[in-house]
Length: 257
Image 1 (cartoon, rainbow, N blue to C red):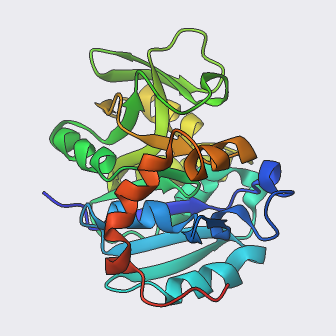
Image 2 (cartoon, rainbow, N blue to C red):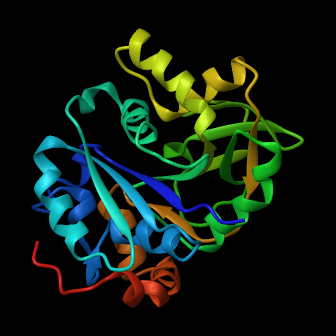
Protein backbone atom coordinates (compact mmCIF):
# COMPACT_ATOMS: atom_id res chain seq x y z
CA UNK A 1 0.00 0.00 0.00
CA UNK A 2 1.22 3.50 -0.82
CA UNK A 3 0.47 6.78 0.89
CA UNK A 4 0.38 9.43 -1.82
CA UNK A 5 0.09 12.65 0.23
CA UNK A 6 2.33 14.32 2.78
CA UNK A 7 2.13 17.38 5.01
CA UNK A 8 5.35 19.23 5.82
CA UNK A 9 5.18 21.46 8.91
CA UNK A 10 7.54 24.40 8.33
CA UNK A 11 5.93 27.35 10.14
CA UNK A 12 8.27 27.33 13.14
CA UNK A 13 10.51 30.25 13.99
CA UNK A 14 13.84 28.42 14.06
CA UNK A 15 15.22 31.01 16.46
CA UNK A 16 18.25 29.01 17.60
CA UNK A 17 19.67 29.01 14.07
CA UNK A 18 18.82 32.62 13.29
CA UNK A 19 22.41 33.76 13.82
CA UNK A 20 23.73 30.85 11.73
CA UNK A 21 21.59 31.46 8.66
CA UNK A 22 20.39 34.69 7.07
CA UNK A 23 17.16 33.20 5.79
CA UNK A 24 14.46 31.14 7.59
CA UNK A 25 15.71 27.74 8.69
CA UNK A 26 13.63 25.41 6.46
CA UNK A 27 14.88 27.24 3.36
CA UNK A 28 18.51 27.58 4.42
CA UNK A 29 21.19 25.47 2.72
CA UNK A 30 22.40 22.28 4.33
CA UNK A 31 25.38 21.48 2.19
CA UNK A 32 24.36 22.09 -1.40
CA UNK A 33 20.57 21.90 -1.01
CA UNK A 34 17.86 23.48 1.12
CA UNK A 35 16.93 21.84 4.41
CA UNK A 36 13.27 21.45 3.46
CA UNK A 37 14.20 19.28 0.50
CA UNK A 38 15.35 16.47 2.79
CA UNK A 39 11.90 15.42 4.11
CA UNK A 40 10.45 16.03 0.64
CA UNK A 41 12.95 13.66 -0.97
CA UNK A 42 12.54 10.95 1.67
CA UNK A 43 8.75 11.00 1.42
CA UNK A 44 8.91 11.12 -2.38
CA UNK A 45 10.98 7.94 -2.34
CA UNK A 46 8.19 6.31 -0.30
CA UNK A 47 5.55 7.16 -2.91
CA UNK A 48 4.30 10.62 -1.94
CA UNK A 49 3.37 12.70 -4.97
CA UNK A 50 1.28 15.49 -3.43
CA UNK A 51 2.78 17.75 -0.77
CA UNK A 52 1.15 20.34 1.47
CA UNK A 53 3.82 22.65 2.90
CA UNK A 54 2.63 24.76 5.85
CA UNK A 55 4.62 27.96 6.37
CA UNK A 56 4.28 31.33 8.07
CA UNK A 57 3.30 34.40 6.06
CA UNK A 58 6.79 35.92 5.96
CA UNK A 59 8.29 32.75 4.47
CA UNK A 60 5.67 32.20 1.79
CA UNK A 61 7.88 33.61 -0.96
CA UNK A 62 10.69 31.22 -0.04
CA UNK A 63 8.29 28.29 -0.11
CA UNK A 64 6.85 29.29 -3.48
CA UNK A 65 10.35 29.58 -4.95
CA UNK A 66 11.26 26.16 -3.58
CA UNK A 67 8.04 24.59 -4.86
CA UNK A 68 8.77 25.81 -8.39
CA UNK A 69 11.90 23.67 -8.38
CA UNK A 70 10.02 20.46 -7.61
CA UNK A 71 9.57 17.96 -10.42
CA UNK A 72 7.15 15.00 -10.69
CA UNK A 73 5.00 16.13 -7.75
CA UNK A 74 2.12 18.45 -6.92
CA UNK A 75 2.90 20.96 -4.19
CA UNK A 76 0.60 23.35 -2.34
CA UNK A 77 1.76 26.16 -0.05
CA UNK A 78 -0.49 26.70 2.98
CA UNK A 79 0.05 29.86 5.02
CA UNK A 80 -0.41 29.76 8.77
CA UNK A 81 -1.29 33.36 9.62
CA UNK A 82 -1.16 32.52 13.33
CA UNK A 83 2.04 30.54 13.88
CA UNK A 84 1.95 31.44 17.57
CA UNK A 85 -0.85 28.87 17.85
CA UNK A 86 1.86 26.20 17.57
CA UNK A 87 2.43 23.28 15.18
CA UNK A 88 -0.83 21.54 16.08
CA UNK A 89 -2.69 24.38 14.40
CA UNK A 90 -0.37 24.11 11.37
CA UNK A 91 -1.26 20.42 11.22
CA UNK A 92 -4.96 21.28 11.24
CA UNK A 93 -4.49 23.66 8.29
CA UNK A 94 -2.71 20.92 6.35
CA UNK A 95 -5.12 18.09 7.14
CA UNK A 96 -8.05 20.20 5.94
CA UNK A 97 -6.55 20.12 2.44
CA UNK A 98 -5.67 16.43 2.24
CA UNK A 99 -7.78 14.51 -0.27
CA UNK A 100 -7.09 10.89 0.60
CA UNK A 101 -7.82 8.78 3.66
CA UNK A 102 -4.18 8.50 4.80
CA UNK A 103 -1.19 10.83 4.69
CA UNK A 104 2.30 11.34 6.04
CA UNK A 105 3.20 14.20 8.36
CA UNK A 106 6.78 15.39 8.73
CA UNK A 107 8.50 18.15 10.62
CA UNK A 108 10.20 20.39 8.07
CA UNK A 109 13.51 20.54 9.93
CA UNK A 110 14.06 16.80 10.39
CA UNK A 111 16.20 14.74 8.05
CA UNK A 112 15.77 10.98 7.92
CA UNK A 113 16.36 7.96 5.78
CA UNK A 114 13.46 6.93 3.50
CA UNK A 115 13.46 3.65 5.41
CA UNK A 116 11.75 5.44 8.32
CA UNK A 117 8.50 6.51 6.61
CA UNK A 118 8.53 3.24 4.67
CA UNK A 119 8.57 1.26 7.92
CA UNK A 120 5.37 2.97 9.09
CA UNK A 121 3.38 1.37 6.28
CA UNK A 122 3.43 -1.92 8.20
CA UNK A 123 1.10 -0.52 10.86
CA UNK A 124 -1.58 1.15 8.74
CA UNK A 125 -4.33 -1.42 9.11
CA UNK A 126 -4.37 -1.30 12.90
CA UNK A 127 -3.87 2.39 13.60
CA UNK A 128 -5.33 5.87 13.25
CA UNK A 129 -1.91 7.42 13.93
CA UNK A 130 1.51 5.79 13.61
CA UNK A 131 4.48 7.58 15.17
CA UNK A 132 7.98 6.77 13.94
CA UNK A 133 9.61 6.04 17.30
CA UNK A 134 13.23 5.31 18.15
CA UNK A 135 14.35 3.55 21.33
CA UNK A 136 18.06 4.04 20.70
CA UNK A 137 18.65 7.28 18.76
CA UNK A 138 22.19 7.77 17.50
CA UNK A 139 22.53 11.46 16.78
CA UNK A 140 20.18 13.50 18.96
CA UNK A 141 20.23 15.01 22.43
CA UNK A 142 17.66 13.10 24.50
CA UNK A 143 17.15 16.17 26.70
CA UNK A 144 15.79 18.04 23.68
CA UNK A 145 13.69 15.19 22.28
CA UNK A 146 9.95 14.63 22.37
CA UNK A 147 9.50 11.46 24.41
CA UNK A 148 7.03 8.59 24.13
CA UNK A 149 5.76 6.07 26.64
CA UNK A 150 4.41 3.01 24.83
CA UNK A 151 3.22 -0.38 26.09
CA UNK A 152 3.25 -3.32 23.65
CA UNK A 153 3.38 -0.90 20.74
CA UNK A 154 0.46 1.24 21.92
CA UNK A 155 1.28 4.87 22.72
CA UNK A 156 0.14 5.91 26.18
CA UNK A 157 1.58 9.43 26.20
CA UNK A 158 3.88 11.71 24.21
CA UNK A 159 5.55 14.90 25.38
CA UNK A 160 8.75 16.83 26.00
CA UNK A 161 8.93 16.42 29.77
CA UNK A 162 8.17 12.76 30.36
CA UNK A 163 10.33 11.20 33.08
CA UNK A 164 9.22 7.70 32.16
CA UNK A 165 9.66 6.93 28.46
CA UNK A 166 10.97 4.21 26.19
CA UNK A 167 11.08 5.92 22.78
CA UNK A 168 11.67 9.32 21.25
CA UNK A 169 9.65 10.86 18.45
CA UNK A 170 11.48 11.20 15.11
CA UNK A 171 9.04 13.80 13.74
CA UNK A 172 7.50 11.48 11.11
CA UNK A 173 3.94 10.12 11.24
CA UNK A 174 1.21 8.46 9.24
CA UNK A 175 -2.31 9.59 10.08
CA UNK A 176 -5.81 8.86 8.85
CA UNK A 177 -8.18 11.62 7.77
CA UNK A 178 -10.53 10.67 10.62
CA UNK A 179 -8.31 12.73 12.98
CA UNK A 180 -9.59 15.92 11.33
CA UNK A 181 -12.59 15.98 13.69
CA UNK A 182 -10.25 16.15 16.68
CA UNK A 183 -8.17 18.90 15.07
CA UNK A 184 -11.29 20.93 14.30
CA UNK A 185 -12.40 20.72 17.90
CA UNK A 186 -9.01 21.73 19.25
CA UNK A 187 -8.75 24.64 16.82
CA UNK A 188 -12.01 26.01 18.21
CA UNK A 189 -11.33 25.39 21.90
CA UNK A 190 -7.56 25.91 22.28
CA UNK A 191 -5.63 29.06 21.47
CA UNK A 192 -2.43 27.00 21.23
CA UNK A 193 -1.86 23.29 20.77
CA UNK A 194 1.05 21.15 19.64
CA UNK A 195 1.14 17.99 17.57
CA UNK A 196 1.98 16.11 20.77
CA UNK A 197 -0.99 17.52 22.70
CA UNK A 198 -3.25 16.68 19.75
CA UNK A 199 -1.99 13.07 19.79
CA UNK A 200 -2.56 12.83 23.55
CA UNK A 201 -6.09 14.11 23.02
CA UNK A 202 -6.65 11.42 20.36
CA UNK A 203 -5.44 8.78 22.83
CA UNK A 204 -7.89 10.05 25.46
CA UNK A 205 -10.71 9.80 22.91
CA UNK A 206 -9.90 6.18 22.07
CA UNK A 207 -8.14 6.61 18.75
CA UNK A 208 -5.61 3.90 17.93
CA UNK A 209 -2.14 5.40 18.25
CA UNK A 210 0.81 3.04 17.74
CA UNK A 211 4.53 3.33 17.42
CA UNK A 212 6.28 2.34 14.24
CA UNK A 213 9.55 1.07 15.66
CA UNK A 214 12.42 2.60 13.70
CA UNK A 215 15.03 2.09 16.41
CA UNK A 216 18.56 2.61 15.18
CA UNK A 217 17.56 4.01 11.79
CA UNK A 218 19.33 7.28 10.86
CA UNK A 219 17.60 10.62 11.50
CA UNK A 220 18.34 14.02 12.98
CA UNK A 221 16.46 17.13 14.10
CA UNK A 222 18.28 20.19 12.74
CA UNK A 223 17.76 22.71 15.52
CA UNK A 224 21.15 24.17 16.44
CA UNK A 225 24.55 24.76 14.79
CA UNK A 226 25.72 21.59 16.50
CA UNK A 227 23.30 19.46 14.45
CA UNK A 228 24.29 21.26 11.25
CA UNK A 229 27.91 20.36 11.92
CA UNK A 230 26.99 16.73 12.68
CA UNK A 231 25.58 16.42 9.16
CA UNK A 232 28.15 18.44 7.26
CA UNK A 233 31.32 17.41 9.05
CA UNK A 234 30.55 14.76 11.61
CA UNK A 235 29.01 11.46 12.49
CA UNK A 236 25.63 12.01 10.83
CA UNK A 237 26.97 12.70 7.35
CA UNK A 238 25.78 9.32 6.06
CA UNK A 239 22.14 10.44 6.45
CA UNK A 240 22.63 13.12 3.83
CA UNK A 241 24.24 10.78 1.30
CA UNK A 242 21.45 8.21 1.76
CA UNK A 243 18.71 10.77 1.10
CA UNK A 244 20.44 12.46 -1.83
CA UNK A 245 20.26 9.27 -3.89
CA UNK A 246 16.76 10.45 -4.87
CA UNK A 247 17.57 14.14 -5.25
CA UNK A 248 17.59 14.27 -9.05
CA UNK A 249 14.09 12.80 -9.31
CA UNK A 250 12.40 15.62 -7.43
CA UNK A 251 14.71 18.60 -7.98
CA UNK A 252 14.33 20.31 -11.34
CA UNK A 253 16.54 23.40 -11.39
CA UNK A 254 19.32 25.11 -9.51
CA UNK A 255 17.73 26.98 -6.61
CA UNK A 256 17.63 30.77 -6.81
CA UNK A 257 16.60 31.54 -3.25
